[in-house]
Image 1 (spheres, rainbow, N blue to C red):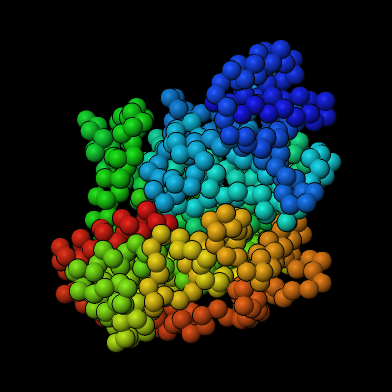
Image 2: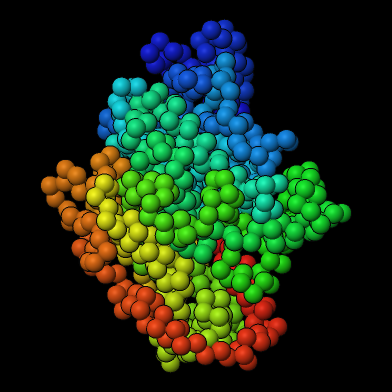
Amino acid sequence: MKKVSVTNHQSNYIFVFGNKAIHHKDIKRTMVYTVLLCLLPVLPLVAPVQYHTLDTPLGKVAGRQVPVGTGNTVYKFLKIPYAKPPVGELRFQKPVAVERWSSIHDSTEHGPSCLQAIPATIKNVLENKEVSEDCLHLNVYTSGGLSSTTNKSVMVFFHGGAFVTGQAQLYDGSGLALNGDVIVVTANYRLGVLGFFSTGDSVARGNYGLWDQIEALKWVKNNIRSFGGNPDSVTIFGESAGGFSVSLLALIPQNKGLFHRVIMQSGTYSSAYAINEKPKDFAITFSYLSKCKNVQTSQAIFDCVRNIPTDLIIPTQTNAIRMGLLAPDSLFRPSCAPVVDGELIKRAPMVSMKNTSSDVYAFFQSLDVIAGCVSAEGSLLHAYIYPYMEESYGFNTSEGVPSSLLRSYFARVVAEQLYKNQSNVWKAIVDKFGSSDIQVQARKIMDLYGDIFFYMPMIKTLDIHASNNKDSSTFQYLFSEPNLVSLSGKPHPSWFRGSEHGTELIFLFGIEQMKSMNINISSSTLDFVKQIITYWANFAKYGDPNHGADDGTRWPEYDEVNRSYIDLAVSSISQQKSMFRDRVKFWEKDLPLIASTPVTDRAASLMSVKWTLLIMLFLYHLIRCL
């Protein structure tokens, strides 16, 4: 049984008994509860938590009021439903807006994560460790005086997790809201099969998770004023799969007015990981493993899968993903991801961007944009992939990686899938990224992976946005600060350099949690955190991360010629140009020239069972860690 606490705010009495928020009219009954509590054994005293209620267009909500420092207050309104539970007939359907409630909604604790297999390292730090199909909730964080007239800019964050894992509750927006003087919203969206199952036609179009994100943004548009937010100043941002998501939302003209600025962190629409080009392959595999009797037609598949018991979805999904990895193009095709559905996403993103007179292109260029990456996106390899290749290639990840891994696997797969197995392309990649030093080789393979799936797609996206654009701003960053802790839970090898995938989220959302873990946070690190939050919040408020800044390094605007960006690290925040210039030149100019004179190596195309199994293993762990 939880503590009972009582607060008075603007003549609204709220009693919290367990998870229930009780209005002052029920005071007599609450007094009875209090008497009963007095009869229980004495428990250790806990400082009472304060609560606050406010009216929204959907009804009253009761959230937490948390004192921070001297004279500061953060308000947390958690587990606010923005759509009806997507269960039963609503499974594999667009979200349906939630209806108004009559009683006070308890927004004091986090809701469950959307259905998934939560990694143990993540599950251990979650307040709510449950998963459920009924998960379409969002959290609102704000600070200062809670008034509908404050008109603060709003930042809506969508989490990453390869579209199969992740949860809003992992990202506490309190620090960003308080120090950036903005309102932060974090939202769950459907994942995996439930979020992105598609038959590749009108029977099951897919993209349910993206529709959820749009519904959450509609909730913000209609309700955020009650929390003091400005619905006409909304920035969406996300990391990894969240970055892919917000970049895709920025290509949908129907979203005009729902948001005005976009921050893409380690993921843009031009990456192979943003779109599943062959969704029906996975749909057939999943339905077959679900023991559907008929997988011959889309309708038969849909009718069967729609009724699969909830507890069978995740284990079946995991097996289907493993089987899908046997496809020769699986390295460049996620199993569960957004699709070109002909409705929400009408054509492939890069195809849409070629038409500079289209409404898609115009909408994208109308938005202010930041896009960036960490300096070691390839950390996904050493944390999750290299250890599973050690036996086959005879190496120890902690010591380094042999060049045979580049020649026989990474260079081979890139040449096969992107350049029709041209042996001259394979050789050029080996020459560019090869090294006889196993430690240097380990880092160079990480560079290769990062270039293909993160850095080059980011640069393409920024070039498109900045091209002849006089209506909005474009900014790029590279986050170079090494991690405070290893995000994978494994120690970094001695050869590892840079900032691993997801590191910037610690500085945006998690610095207080680091303090609570007794991790020493230097004053220079705290100053750095303050500067990062200032950049992000200024961009959200003004479309310019430098607005009103009298000190600190000015963040240069990006253009196609100079490709200026800001390098973010505690030791130095600096202006730079042409990120990874030499490698970018290789992918943009050198390799296309080499590939223009194709030389087919038929023997190289005959991949043995050994390589097939390695691909399957590699991609399985890659999908789980994004």
